[in-house]
Image: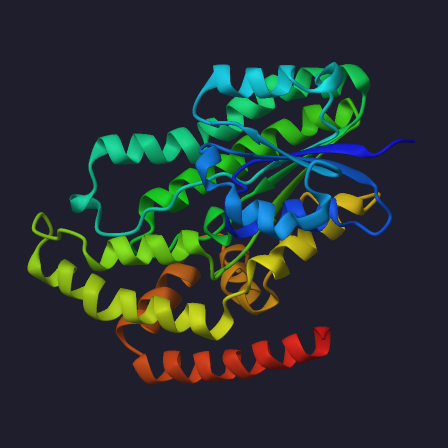
Length: 310
C-alpha cells in the first residue's frame, strides 16, 4: 500500500501547521500531505517548518473553506481526487458579550467553523464512500461539549460541528469511513493570541456597565491564567492527532488535555444540567481563592505531565 494522501486545512500557523509538518516528517513515510491555507502569502512559516519535506512529502495548496469553488478546485487538482484523510482544522474565534457582536460577524464565524467543515465533507465523502475507506478528522474543542462564559457564539459553532459529526458518523461507518473529533482545551497559538488581543480592544459600549466589567475584570484575567496554567502547545495537540490518524481503530472523540476533563465530565454527571452551570458560576463569581488555588494545582500537574512525557 502506498502513502496515504492527507489534506489538512488551516496550515498557515498553529495546530494545522504543526500537524502537517508532523505527518510529512513521519519516520515510516506513510503520508503525502496536502497542506492548505486560504492566503498563500502566509506560507513562509510552513515552508520553514517543513524543511526538506517541502515538495516531497508535503505540498502547499490554496483552499478557502468558505468557498465551494476553491475546495473543488483544490480537490480536482489531486490525482484521482484521492484524499484518504481529511483534517478539518481551519477556524476562527470569537469572544465577548453578545450585545457587542454583529450578526454578520456571527454568520462569518459559522461560515468558517461549521459550514467550512460541511462543504469539505460534502465534497470528499462521496469519493470515500465509493472507495469504502477514509478518515475524517475534525478539530473541534472542549467548547463543543461544554459552554463557557462569553464564548456563546464560538461554543455554538463547535456544538454544531459535534452534532453534525455525531449524526454523520453512523452513515460513514456503514461505508468503512472513520470520523474522529479532536477536542483540545486551551492551546497557546497565534489564533488564540489574536482573539485575546482583539478582545482587549473591543468596543463594549453596547453592553451594560456590569457586563462590561465582568468581561474585562473577571473573564479576561481568568482566561489568561487558565491558558498559562494548563494551555497546550500546538505540537502537543498535533502529536496526539498524529497518533489518532495512524491508529487502526481511532475513537470518535478524543480530548487532548487530561487536566480539562473534570470540567467536561460534570455535564454528563448531571442530566439536569445544573451541576456544570452552578459550578462555573461559583468558580467565577463566588470562590476566587478556590479558583486560583485550583489553577496552582493544575499548573503543577501540567508541569509534571510534561516532564513525564519528555
